[in-house]
Length: 436
Image (cartoon, rainbow, N blue to C red):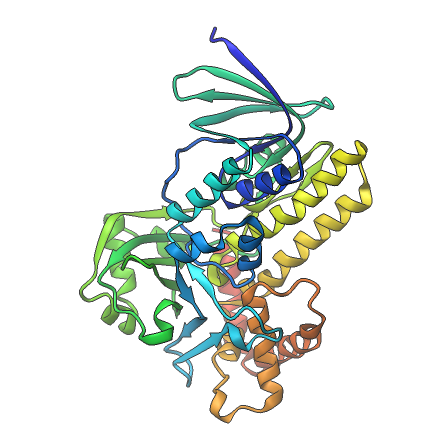
């Protein structure tokens, strides 16, 4: 039997991605002893390169904003494209959000971005260990334990007063607690890769994300600073099951279904391998318990159409750091604090999910692509500004957007009723796909 090494801390964090490094850094700043375990080594590939404007205050709080600026390309807007509406393209500029002050975000290579955050948490005093795979946890006692194994096969035991799962899609605690379930409202999967020589927009729009609707789902194009473009297709299960060729060839064939995308990638080449991610959307029934917390993708993962993943992870980590610090300070569970935290996380996720669940529906598709600004009424501009605020990550506790969002959702219902047969057919199709 391999020897076991024991280590004790105030807080143990599983996972060295944006959620884990953020909460570890902030807790270390509060004077807590923190140990973070990451199974891989930085830099490592990760999809999800598009940040939101509301990521920037968090990056500033962590002290890494200048470093991210050095590796990123500025993203001033999200651009939507359609071949099924009168308006073929509409661009949602963050500067036109209801609350000004955050007019851009960044597109980043996640390998570089995550490494910056990982090195930063070590700089702040976190004991951050790479190449350490968690193989089990003990949650029953007041002292929480992690059993892990390093790359040489040596077993280690770590203990702490509090345990945080930020393991991303590995969902370590949700798997152990048997609390993870697929999202019944949204069952899609993705194929993606990095390409060179992809045609970009010009000027200030060069860093914008481009999103295209097509009959099998939607497609993203995310320009990165080094000339690479991240391209992916989020598709319905039946379409992905139709693949009879290698993944890279299937990805290329899928992209060429849209004429403008086909034109933008006419000189492009795939760098590295095409990849696929299944079982796309999920959530844990449990967000917290006695002495433990799930944050970021370890708790829930939603469709990335609005680039919400990194923001939601880092935002829940920021709030989670305050929560855990207060719980450790008082050394007793405070149900009201935990309830407030869980409600705030759920509210932010739900703000995106309302749009995500309806994104491919004819009613929302038409509504998003009907904002020709040159001939638009001021009230419609307010509605669009409210939607932009959600896309920017500024939805939680933003009282300015509540009434406009209600009006927007009312217009969605009107659109849905106006073309009842088309929307009813889509809802029937989506239910079939979610049962596949």
